[in-house]
Length: 477
Image 1 (tube, one colour):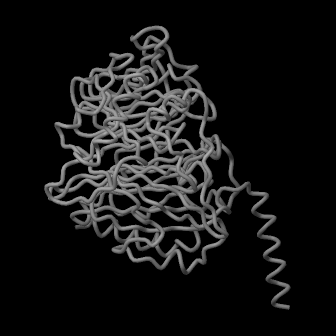
Image 2 (cartoon, helix red, strand yellow):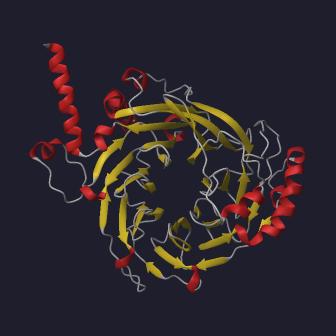
Image 3 (cartoon, one colour):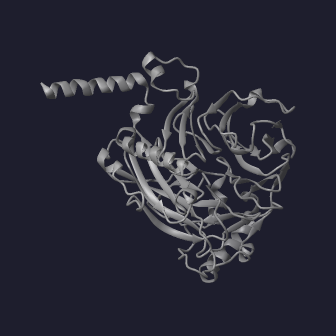
């Protein structure tokens, strides 16, 4: 009871500061908990390609989608999961969301929201009835209408969200049939999932202690024929947990063994489809290179003092890797300092959470910035360039904030299970919490952007504030 009162007090304080800290915020109540959320882009037009045609083109081009833009807001696509209690099927939800442009929303509008209501900025576009829970969603960066999902099974499921029919989640409904099934795990693979930014490759980890790599491109011939047949049948027959295997299946390009416990997260090197890393419940960080075999290239045996839950590889500098752990900390490793003997110390240790870290992700907008979420209900934004930097006397007296921490999003009242930076809308973030423990069910989705005065260069901010001061004094006189 005391912990719940503490959370409510923190939340009340946070809400009172929303007009000061945020440029824009939308709060969306979820009927069912969601374990994954992803920003995507909404096209103004339909590409008109089947999944097989899209995969054929993945090697040769990167799509150039257009955002639907208006004077004061942009329209984006959002992928969410719904974890039901079994009374209705679990679902993969495709939603359209409107993101208000910077410096447009009035302070009173973003702070006056109802926690129990759905946001007018988020509209459900399509529902896919998923065979099993949707634990993780990842999209092909070459074409974000193709997504992969992890569920409570050994398979990875691939979906073309454009060609999948819209379904209604009612009791007894047959589940949707995936466009492609990736096989290769010997036990459930529930969370570790990544899509290569440069090639149509998929990476997964599971309870079988293995990391599995697929190249969708290797199987185009079979896929082109079988997908065409399945798309025609899919809207008529639907599917269920057993029928998921009727979708075309592909076997892995490689299986990599080096962990001694469940693999919890995986990530590709941003510059190579054949280099990747993994973390697991054995506290190990392992780097792999498929070009030199299936054995680890680098293995850090004690990357943290606890299970490792998440990993992310910097898209700005491929030497830097982030890890998050059950020991409540985030570590930043420089792979140039790691050796094959299992020795390696982090460049920095970030301590700003009071519970297990669940997700880490580098910012697409600034190379030194990243975010982290945890079971303490907080989403922290860090800047490793600020670590060790001296501050003036006013800043030093302001707080005892951990080194590198410059923003805390406290809008959730339960564990923040996932978040995602919007790559096409700078500094805009979507985050989702599983509210089962705090409220007995449901979840909270928030789309937000902090005030730009917080992250812009100090001299630039002071110059702007000085202009406002001159304007105010001029008005008063």
